[in-house]
Image (cartoon, rainbow, N blue to C red; front, side, top):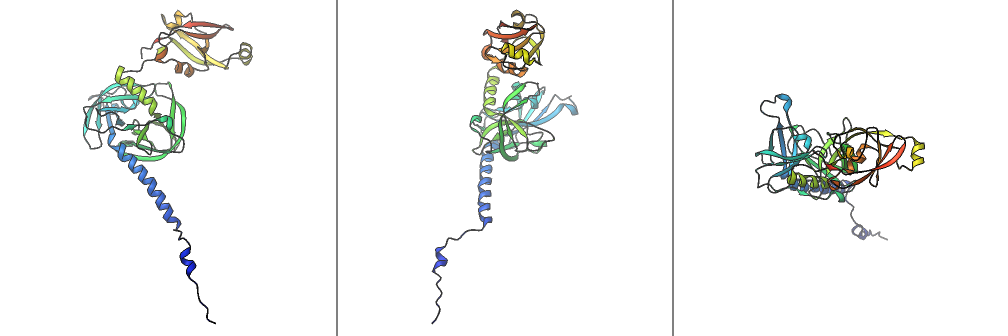
Amino acid sequence: MALVRDDRHIDSEPTVPPREYHDDLLLDAYSSTVIRAVSMVGPAVVNLEVSKGSDSGRGGKGGGSGFFFTPDGYILTNSHVVHGMKEIVATDSEGIRHTAQLVGEDPETDLAVLRTDSFRTTPATLGDSQRIRPGQIAIAIGNPYGFQATVTAGVISALGRSMRSYSGRMMDDIIQTDAALNPGNSGGPLINSAGEVIGVNTATILPAQGICFAIAINTAKYVAGMLIKHGRIRRSALGIGGEWTSLPRRFVRAHGIERDSGVLVVSVAPGSPAEIAGLKQGDLIVRFDDTPIAAVDDLHRRLTDKIIGVPKALTIVREGQVMQRVIIPTESPG
């Protein structure tokens, strides 16, 4: 009896591509996403060359990055890139150099707005930093060490970080990313996979690797709008100098104080809201209106432009006694 081979099963089984085929497809999809996002924002990125003037010498020059965010030539960058500089030149993606003027800066959020005579550059699209999530793609474009139009990519590592600006004030709502940043990236955009700017690159931690930070674009939108309108950010002031100090736990429990530390008043400016309210050197501020105060940064966060001229209750500790004072903040001179 002859044996007959049945080959019908060969065509009925699906062919499984080798693993390398799948990896190539995934890599191509990721690459295409980054390329598309960079092509959307890249033309808006500029290289900034700054100096303190023609007689500034070697120590008076620097550089950084920025990006057009309006069609009429406004550039967003970091305050520390342009602070104290008299001459600012922005070179766009086509190599055209533009003289830029400082519209305004806010060292306390490390943001600045410049104005050029460019009316033909397509601005970057600003996204919504409240919608980003840890793990999503983050792409940085800038000019590290003068290497123009450098692209690095990574992910959003964390949200809601706090860090201190070069002015010494605490900045909140900071984005952490592992997209590589280096000196010269400062002021450049951090973008998402849709080609929207979600942050303004500002700092790294040395010698750590993969720990970089950007100012959330929602913060930048507000600050940029105020700088264009007023040239500065309006904040309120109390007229005190303060520092952190601790409270004895027994005292905290006995008086129902929410925190075991507060702001020690070390100086009171003559004629200031603090002096008018009766504050004295040595007082300890533990509450501002309805907010517990445990450190100077807690107090800074409350001193917005919305409370200028608005009476507020201060809870203080003086010579072992808890008491309240009413204070009316005035506008900070800047």
